[in-house]
Length: 174
Image (cartoon, rainbow, N blue to C red; front, side, top):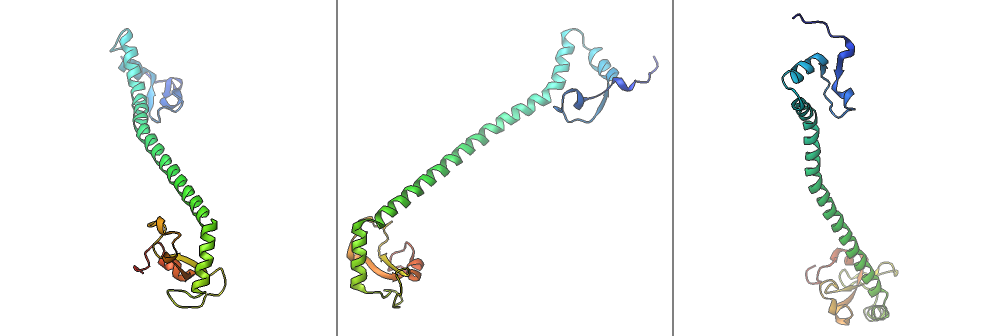
């Protein structure tokens, strides 16, 4: 039996048939598919082979996406939950800080420390000019020793530069 020329209308491109499910740009002729699949298998077996051949790569792709998507989604959910927790903690700390530094007890004690120590930095000894540069520092940081936050012996006057340099360290550490 001589090979006959295949009309262009019988040549199929897989990507056209399956709307881009497969990105295979391979040209397959209809008689080749018919001969290789349908002649060797009869009855429902050829449907199984055809389905297996065409759908397996797609099924593998879907299964892989689902397998990979679950850990990705769970990791994303954990990260988002952690970010929300951190943001909530920061908000609570800032609110607590605002409550403390605007409390009448702190404002009165701060004024007392400034009155007693004068406007001279306890670290560098410079005269502090202006309220913007004047800070009252906790020798033992409030974060480490909250029970000492409103004790006069734990407070001293510092210029903004020295207080920023000190940060949350104890005054003996500087």
